[in-house]
Image (cartoon, rainbow, N blue to C red; front, side, top):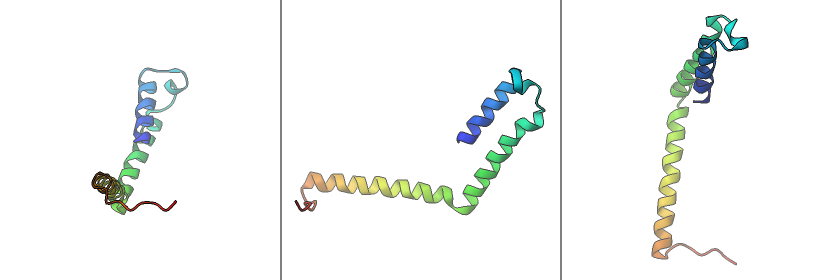
Amino acid sequence: MYLLAVSLVLLALKYFEVAPFAAMSWWWMLVPFALTASWWFWSDSSGYTKRKAQEKMDQRRQERLDKHKRALGTERRKPR
Protein backbone atom coordinates (compact mmCIF):
# COMPACT_ATOMS: atom_id res chain seq x y z
CA MET A 1 0.00 0.00 0.00
CA TYR A 2 2.89 2.35 0.68
CA LEU A 3 4.05 2.03 -2.90
CA LEU A 4 0.59 3.02 -4.13
CA ALA A 5 0.60 6.06 -1.83
CA VAL A 6 4.00 7.12 -3.21
CA SER A 7 2.68 6.64 -6.74
CA LEU A 8 -0.33 8.86 -6.08
CA VAL A 9 1.79 11.56 -4.45
CA LEU A 10 4.18 11.58 -7.43
CA LEU A 11 1.23 11.75 -9.80
CA ALA A 12 -0.23 14.71 -7.90
CA LEU A 13 3.13 16.50 -7.91
CA LYS A 14 3.41 16.01 -11.66
CA TYR A 15 -0.19 17.07 -12.31
CA PHE A 16 0.13 20.27 -10.26
CA GLU A 17 3.53 20.95 -11.85
CA VAL A 18 5.62 21.12 -8.70
CA ALA A 19 9.24 22.15 -9.39
CA PRO A 20 11.39 19.09 -10.21
CA PHE A 21 8.48 16.86 -11.22
CA ALA A 22 7.02 19.23 -13.81
CA ALA A 23 9.95 18.65 -16.18
CA MET A 24 9.82 14.84 -15.90
CA SER A 25 8.12 12.73 -18.52
CA TRP A 26 4.74 11.18 -17.77
CA TRP A 27 6.32 7.77 -18.35
CA TRP A 28 8.38 8.22 -15.18
CA MET A 29 5.17 8.82 -13.27
CA LEU A 30 3.82 5.47 -14.48
CA VAL A 31 6.82 3.47 -13.23
CA PRO A 32 5.66 3.40 -9.56
CA PHE A 33 2.22 2.22 -10.69
CA ALA A 34 3.84 -0.60 -12.66
CA LEU A 35 5.90 -1.55 -9.61
CA THR A 36 2.75 -1.53 -7.49
CA ALA A 37 0.94 -3.79 -9.94
CA SER A 38 3.88 -6.19 -10.11
CA TRP A 39 4.08 -6.31 -6.30
CA TRP A 40 0.36 -7.13 -6.07
CA PHE A 41 0.70 -9.80 -8.76
CA TRP A 42 3.67 -11.40 -6.98
CA SER A 43 2.06 -11.28 -3.53
CA ASP A 44 -1.15 -12.87 -4.79
CA SER A 45 0.54 -15.54 -6.90
CA SER A 46 3.06 -16.53 -4.23
CA GLY A 47 0.45 -16.86 -1.49
CA TYR A 48 1.96 -14.04 0.58
CA THR A 49 -1.38 -12.25 0.93
CA LYS A 50 -3.28 -15.34 2.08
CA ARG A 51 -0.50 -16.35 4.46
CA LYS A 52 -0.53 -12.93 6.14
CA ALA A 53 -4.33 -13.01 6.40
CA GLN A 54 -4.20 -16.50 7.94
CA GLU A 55 -1.54 -15.42 10.45
CA LYS A 56 -3.71 -12.48 11.49
CA MET A 57 -6.78 -14.71 11.92
CA ASP A 58 -4.76 -17.26 13.93
CA GLN A 59 -3.45 -14.52 16.21
CA ARG A 60 -6.94 -13.14 16.81
CA ARG A 61 -8.23 -16.66 17.49
CA GLN A 62 -5.45 -17.33 20.02
CA GLU A 63 -6.08 -14.01 21.76
CA ARG A 64 -9.78 -14.83 21.98
CA LEU A 65 -9.05 -18.28 23.44
CA ASP A 66 -6.62 -16.82 25.98
CA LYS A 67 -9.19 -14.22 27.00
CA HIS A 68 -11.83 -16.90 27.58
CA LYS A 69 -9.38 -19.07 29.52
CA ARG A 70 -8.52 -16.15 31.79
CA ALA A 71 -12.22 -15.42 32.31
CA LEU A 72 -12.89 -19.04 33.27
CA GLY A 73 -9.78 -19.27 35.41
CA THR A 74 -8.52 -22.36 33.61
CA GLU A 75 -5.37 -20.79 32.27
CA ARG A 76 -2.24 -22.46 33.60
CA ARG A 77 -0.35 -20.33 36.04
CA LYS A 78 3.20 -19.37 35.29
CA PRO A 79 5.81 -20.71 37.71
CA ARG A 80 7.34 -18.13 40.02
